[in-house]
Image (cartoon, rainbow, N blue to C red; front, side, top):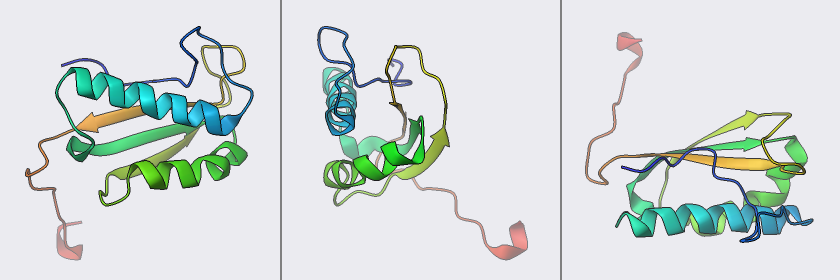
Length: 112
């Protein structure tokens, strides 16, 4: 399986767009292209880590993220990361995959 971590939102030329929305869309498109190449669908995503430079980036991307994951419910973890690899980069995505029909662990209070 390929590595689906630290996917950035750079354009095809490797340039980070000025718009945070465009950067978010690029990262999601790149993620989807990797998954499609490996014959994996969005439904196979169990967890997505959305790393952002600051809270404003998350707020700006919420609508975009909601549109991409409408109807499916991966666990989303937000991580604030003040620095990234590329100059001007404000976010990255990492995904964890699991078969869509695999059971997720469920714990009750007594087990914790």
